[in-house]
Length: 393
Ligand code: AMP
Ligand code: MG
Image (cartoon, rainbow, N blue to C red; front, top):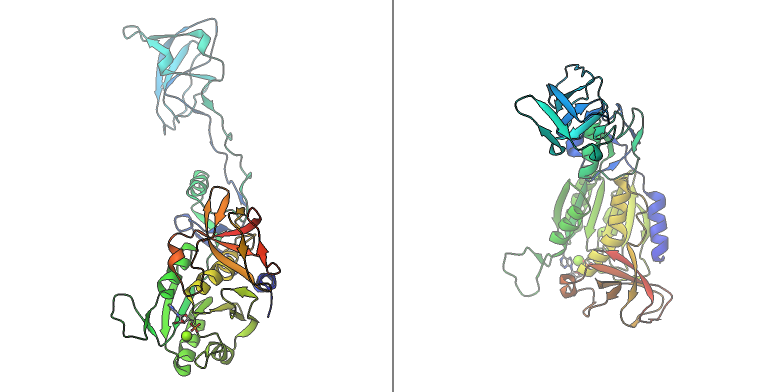
């Protein structure tokens, strides 16, 4: 049996990212840049007005000017403004030749009869209200680094320099298999001895939350042949396979045997942790397999600790094994020495509270828990106020 940190290390040593892809900017939200991005142009690519107003060569000895041409945003004509005159100009319009200043229209008084304009000298300085060429970024300048998540803002930046495609890591495709003869779907009637399949809907949601777009779900009874067939099918179809249940030592737990038959190489089996001790991870070429014990708390905890970081790494993220926060434990906790505990927790300000009902079959605390709290393997008692690793759910 290995420690939690060994399991993290083995996974991090084995995970290899797939090649990146050049995709449409429109499809890139939430993905990770696979290359540094340089601007192909100066932005702005021409000096332009930051205001609606009047453009002129500023002369502090005069405050009255003839109004000349009218220049709208998008007007590509080459205007020339003579000294002593002002052009009507609008936000984003190209600054004409001979102009060094734009005076906002709010500061101008215009004589309708003569077309002359006047303004308060004190409020204006030479160079005001002009956005200079290249003031956002220069051609060939680095504007976003490899590893940056694509946010709506980054999409705006990339579009502003004229890019409509972007090189990103694409997330893994995932198939999950739910195993167990006892399982029925919510919305149908239960016979005594049967339970509802809660891991299926939970895994579906966990995968969506982890940014996975291509998700397939399969179900298998505890029948070796059926399980084998579903495992083979899933391995052919997806980059990552997650299995719920059937990985313990019961007489009907065939998952490990079927994975071996399918040519999967074991990376580890059994971790010194609670919940989720009999967790298995394996690899077949560039495919990764996670078999999680069927108890819902084990599925949630093992997904959070091992599957989610692995999926994030495959999708191009860095530092995926670090805790999300370190918070102070609200009350004393007792635990078994020799096992790392992952408890459902609720963050409140800088504290984390551990609600009751932590057994691996019990889902009630899931309704209020917003994190998992890691309690170290070699401890038996952890005192209130001790800083603990917290992982967001
Ligand atoms: P297993 O790992 O297959 O031995 O299952 C361990 C426990 O988790 C058993 O009590 C199962 O009934 C329960 N279990 C397994 N799969 C699911 C599931 N999809 N939804 C809810 N409970 C499950
Ligand atoms: Mg089972």
